[in-house]
Image 1: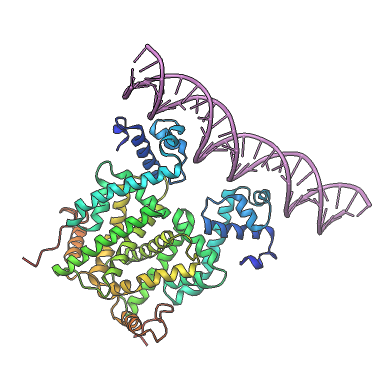
Image 2: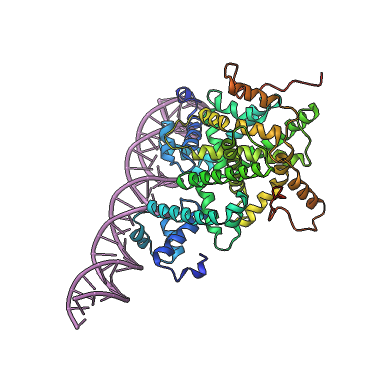
Length: 229
Length: 229
DNA sequence: CGGCAGACTGAACAAGCGTTTAATGTATTG
DNA sequence: CAATACATTAAACGCTTGTTCAGTCTGCCG
């Protein structure tokens, strides 16, 4: 996958990998000419092999989905979902895919949805396993909790990736570990101890969910009962 | 700000507002011609007034920062930070700004950083107030916790905005309430009760923070002590 | 060996881009 | 009223884009 060992691939595969790299590094607005140069071929050949830029991206999508599907089932079963992204960022040759995934999340589309939904699935079984093992609390809505966790983690990681000052080391493993270092402690603190001292908010929301007659609690959350004066 | 009442503005202001709308709706790749059409002027006039497309975006940035700075100080003091975004999405005429902010988060840059940092500041004082009032638990690192909360919330919201199926109602208030409806319950549940049943992970991380001699706990999180067999 | 198929290139094309330019209209000012 | 300054536009410029085309090269099959 690294440019050194790209030479022995079919031209078609070389173009696909070059596109994957440049799409990930520069976004999907990158020109066909830039991709062709990265692959060491003429722009015409890119079109000759893939028909159009759009179909080239579709081929990249498919390729990434196939690769990540394998990686996932191999490793994620015995570890948390975060490890999945770590593997992608660290294992040599997979950093391009990590970059491509971040760009996909940033731009929406099929790869983003697919990655999201698969991670939700994985996290859900991971949490359910934790429940059975007695390490994780049960939830009122396990599916929603899994979606919540994935949305927060992926969204935050993507935001961090996007907002990094340009010019700083763009290596995926660097970015990922910046993110982990910044948020590991508050995350674990929240997971372990929670944040609120009373359950007023939660009780109100659950009551409203069971009987939606009263004023919706999520629109204008009233301040908690003041215990001071 | 709505197109109905744009007529009585200076052409310069009309162009700026049109740019804000189209930048937010279609992204920063939208053409100067499209912005000109939205404003009802010629493409040349856009350049005449702002010098270049880049400077036009800078003018939008500045305008948005000025507007949100006011909105914030007015309202956020007495409410949570989420209310700030809700106001933006709901109050008539501010939905364009909400869209522009989401695009800015998606693309990085100064507006994104500024919005992020200001929300971190606000959340930090909000949490500190809660601590003093006895409704929110203290944290080992209040600043990190505030950054964590903002990163997760903004990132997740941005991800949700990006991943919505194209063609569905793009009204900001719709998007925001979809997001709230999806994640309010798991968020409150987590905030109220936490997620982990024992503090093994947190203790290990805190121990490593105080004395980083052992193997770093965040690289390869060891599975929790198995209580089953 | 002849011929055909596919890989591949360099040049060109049409469309779209941001921007420039020259010209026209429209006020404001001396 | 003449003159100056500014707002505004239509047209064009130069560039980049994705894509097409005609032609060359290469290897394979009969």
